Image (cartoon, rainbow, N blue to C red; front, side, top):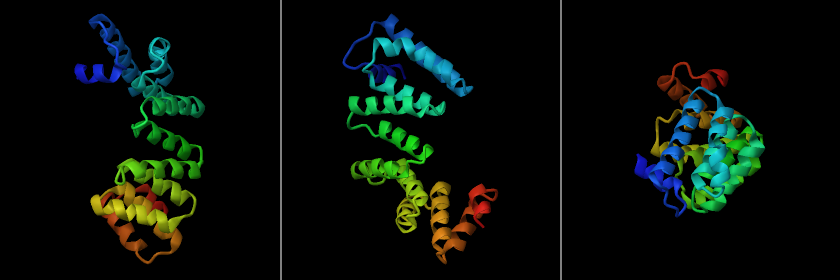
Length: 198
């Protein structure tokens, strides 16, 4: 665990063991605060590191996530975009940006970033899920259902993709709606989305 964390924390820098322990403790403390939904405190524990290591990928990614949890989307966007610049191949910051766009009803932006990601990783689980959500929100039900069906080939019992397919089919008056509805209830009898779209 420490070796992995050390690799993530270093941006071609080597820390002394004392420095590593301080950095590790700050991260672990932020995880503890996150678990009890004290997101401001989680950010505060990382603030000294942010001043000292402003160009650290993991730190920017973590701050993006913590600000997202606080619904401080402008701050979250800033950190996710910085993380994306620091590691242009990484998918994580862009997934974070899509979550923000979905939360702020910027569905076209969410679709555009998801499209970018899917060019790199066609079967990325979350990029496809967020794409289906963004398309459904824009009433692009046919394309949304194609995305969901593609992923259900790989994950036939996945509730989240079944829910998105149900939304698409219901809105488009697709005759297979009932089958999807029944499948969801077999897997998750108290499913809120299935019950609310009956």
